[in-house]
Image (tube, rainbow over all chains, first blue to last red; front, side, top):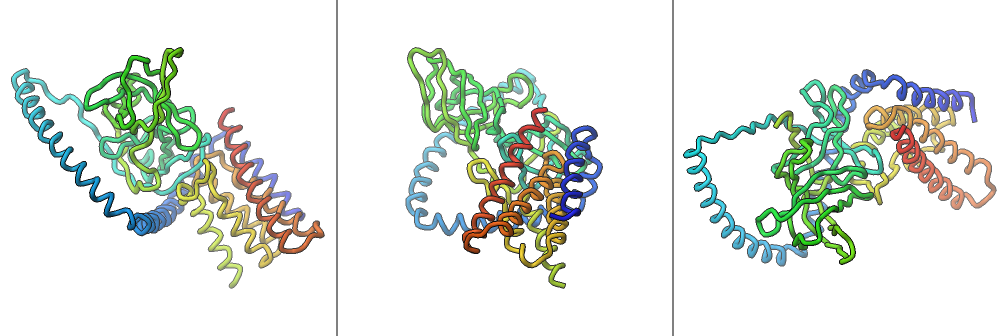
Length: 263
Length: 123
């Protein structure tokens, strides 16, 4: 072992201490101007390779998947007709009551540039930061699905903690056959798992039910889908029952997401 | 010339370590691609060159990731010390020692990053 080695080891320990006392966000922001575009290029390349591999590996199952998707389309078409009727009825009622849409979301589109480990979970990195108006605590969505919450921001990069991160808590509601049947709390578990807890025993929850944000607590907007129930566990002598939640999207397949600046 | 190519590849892989973390996630841990590369090039450089290159790779990982600055740098330096010690001080068959040093350095790096991140973020 050389002197250079020991000097660099002590220097790295000094950096750890220094960053704990005075967070070196300035150095991070400056370096990320150069590093973030390279990371973005590498991520996009890997995502394309992953998509191609996924396409090739799913080829043998495409026929059966196609058949089941056709069935789903016909059932969804029926639902769409019902929703359209309800929507037009809702519009007429809104006009009559003079109700305006009070919610106006301001969003910023950000590209995924990589991932980082934090608190036993993968943290997603987006290429928009404080310079674009992003702040800690903002919600990140894709369509009407919740992707996570911004936990840390530098000038050009924001770090997003997904709902399945350990210690993550999201107030949620259970949607069973298109109607809201009850509430619970989605808790992140180790290894990208989510559990819905605090669900009352008399609530009818089944495999395939959709779990969405309830909007309680004001941290997350309401009606953002979180996942689908994949397993329900309940014991008669317990007050609450739990359910395992499967995310609706795969973090690895995300290329971009919206950061909601206000809602 | 060779050293510049090795260093450039190392810096790109250090960025890839963060950019590809989502694709290399095994049971909640990220596969240490940079350590595998360091292990592959261990005989191409002198120990001092190897140390300095590892230090800069660690700094790149730290600057891009959200963890405390210095954690990956320190962990990578400890991991290369493991490679160096096992390969220089053991008397076993060369292939066996090489494989042991690769596995041990990967485990040390992942373990240290995981331990230091969880300890320092809870402070």
